[in-house]
Length: 227
Ligand SMILES: Nc1nc2c(ncn2[C@@H]2O[C@H](COP(=O)(O)OP(=O)(O)O)[C@@H](O)[C@H]2O)c(=O)[nH]1
Ligand SMILES: [Mg+2]
Image 1 (cartoon, rainbow, N blue to C red):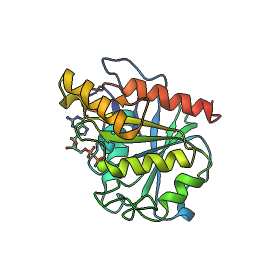
Image 2 (tube, protein in one colour):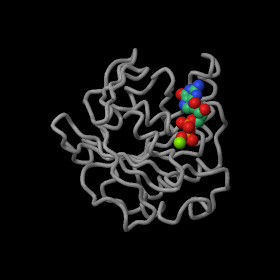
Image 3 (cartoon, rainbow, N blue to C red):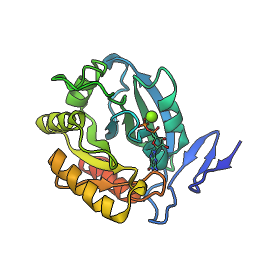
């Protein structure tokens, strides 16, 4: 069965095909998304290969919606399947000749539980070694909700990533819910609260910022030695 999604993406049994057409324009590459596996322990991680992009955020921040906007329904569906929400879900992004170009890793949402000194008491133990040691990890995309003030759990995660010298990009989700004034105010407050120079405003609903995020991901891919 084939279907064309709301955003104009084309999906069939073989997968979803980008780029996503939004009013902002196109991402530069056509990718097919292929689910690789769900890992519940470090031994289950796929063999490191192409540059990897990790997605991190608190539950309900809009991670599934963002993955859906970036690469299609498949990633979002797999990642919200019960039993897979506590796993790291790995997806390969294949170029038109079906060669893997990137891997997306979708990490479990860190909960409302207070993050302790090991990043999170509520996080499975294999997350921290993944972030610390995964050699192909080129970028961590950290999601924060633009409607919610800076959270201690997000602050701790970002401090941890800084300490680990991991490249990260922070995106503020659900921007469509805010008026123009609120956008400016909330982004400034988040930057201050999280000690950031830059935060990328996005909306999975309207597609705003998705093209810019793709550009950031592809820059990280290039920096990590992808081609
Ligand atoms: N208005 C709006 N709602 C969003 C957006 N992204 C996510 N949501 C909503 O926020 C809720 C949580 O989103 P979801 O993607 O499941 O979050 P996750 O738990 O981080 O995977 C759902 O009700 C989504 O419809 C967005 O860009 N705009
Ligand atoms: Mg989700």
